[in-house]
Length: 224
Image (cartoon, rainbow, N blue to C red; front, side, top):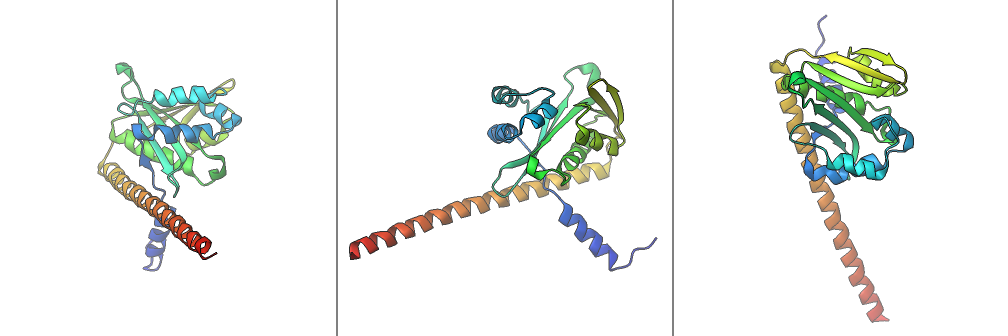
């Protein structure tokens, strides 16, 4: 099938409009990660961690994140708040060096927009480029959203009681996967810096407006 000249730009435009900036997170983002996880309600915490995690347990989890070994990704809004966070943990056992485990959490008001699936696809690309051959997901059987993501990716799912394990075999890295990750990282960095500049500008603008209102109020009081 040959696409017409009108179809190609439309398809490209749709892809660009659907693109979501996913940025790698580092130690300086611990506070934002903890804030995001603490906003999860009791049910969502149970689905994400497999137990009803308290704020203290979340803080310990975030404090123990190993950013040098693992990969943590996030989606920011314009206020630089994390809307979704994914954690891909690489095996510490040399015998299973080619394996990694994936977990994700999404703010309740952002559900149904495909953020979890996008984060999973981003993690898959990086895992391939890092030589990972098997991506593993452990989830509660009632976590249908997570299992749907795994199933749509072609993962093999095994259920045992209230828990399920998903296994996804990954192909070897190629030029396309490496280039795709490079472009996504670069665009996500640009997006984050633009949002940072915008937030700084709005804060400076608000400060100037507050000063202007203070001056105007002082003049009004003096005139009285």
